[in-house]
Amino acid sequence: MEKTLSPPADAPARKAPASTEIPFFSQAAEFERLWPRIRNECVRVLDRGKFSHGAMVAEFERELARWTGARHVVGVNSGTDALVLLLRAAGLRPGDEVIVPAYTFVATASAVVLAGGVPVFADIERRGYGVDPASVAAAVGPRTRMVMPVHLFDRLADMAGVHEVARRHGLTVLEDSAEAIGMRLDGRHAGLLSTGGVLSFFPAKTLGAIGDAGALLTDDDGIAETARRLRHHGRAGRTLDDFPGIANPTVVSGCNSKMDDLQAAVLLAKLAGLDAAIARRAELSARYDARLRGLPGVRAVPGEVPPHPGGGRVVYVHLIEADRRDALVAHLAARGIGTETYYPLPLHLQPCFAHLGHAPGDFPRAEAACASAVALPLYPDLTDAQADRVCDAIEDFCTRRRR
Image: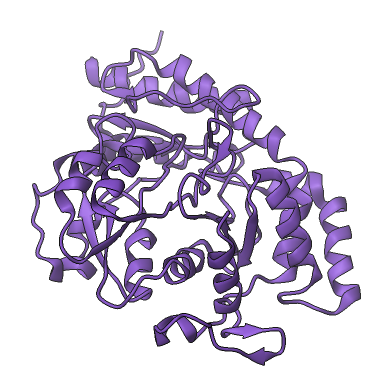
């Protein structure tokens, strides 16, 4: 009998054939399934001949407002622009400081800069990766005007803790809720737990477009009206109008942040299946949890995950922590399994924010998360068998290391 030898634990494996690869994200099967509905909505746009800021955008805004419970939804061209417009509409002035977590996507902080403000970083909590209210309190200074917590992956930030700090210091609270469609606290949707929030419809999001798109959510009439004008060069109707009562010229001058009607058509077609998509993501996430529990060297992100009002969880990304994260990523990639690193570098150590004067060790929990967190494939058309293959590969990595 011929003897076979297992390769060393860290030996590179041959790349899996394309037919067996499991991408980190794919919506090809979803689009094939939904194509008749998407096609019908897109044809409506083509028949009208209005491709930007038209009737389809207004229709999508109405339906999303109904789904989220928001008084106002303002459709724009990206989640990043939604953040910029929210900050400006909420009254951010040049030089004002906005406290943001050090562990988040760069747009959270870059939007502050684009709106004329200065980002000030705070560390995250160990449980759940949300911004730590105690670190927020320590970051408050004489020029601090706002605090912007971020809802990440599958859970909300500690809004009660953030609001308590904000009340003590007279700060406006805004939410970077770009990832949080479907997440609710006591029945209120993310983005409506403060002065306002945003949603991103980047293709990989729980509700994804076929390009960039986003929305601003708020129950504040004034912020909604200002944001609507800002997204269209400051225009109300066909004319350039001023903003009565607003003395800041950087707010009065608008920009071109309108949502395309074809993106709105796609989102409107997919919105009808959003609850089912959320439920499927929750099933897959629970499958990962069950299969990976107890494996040496990998673990779930600690902290409670709020349930969805309809049952289950709202999971945008299934995140795990790994002691040898980069080696695990390489191990999975060699087997044709895609992953994403959230996030490679905390914001305070990004070169674009070097002028703020931070050094390694300033926000240790954010730095630890960046060193250990990795996201696994998660989308509605991922099969149970594919999820099991991901788990088999992770188990193989963990047991090889133990041997």
